Length: 95
Image (cartoon, rainbow, N blue to C red):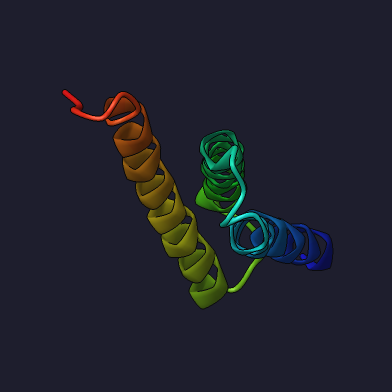
């Protein structure tokens, strides 16, 4: 139980805090487009792993499992939408 909780907490920190700090650090960079893509791919993959780890029945308490599921799903949706917008509007007009 402790190992899975520690792993989920570590992934949560890596998945949500590091991409946001990278984006804020390089917000005035000339190659912001590539930084955004890398950041949101990291968020997307990290959310997928968090969902996978916590979707199965485990030893975690029920509220913790559902909290991590919800955070993973929200990160998955958010990063998917942002990546889609980045790719659709990369040449200016989109669609």
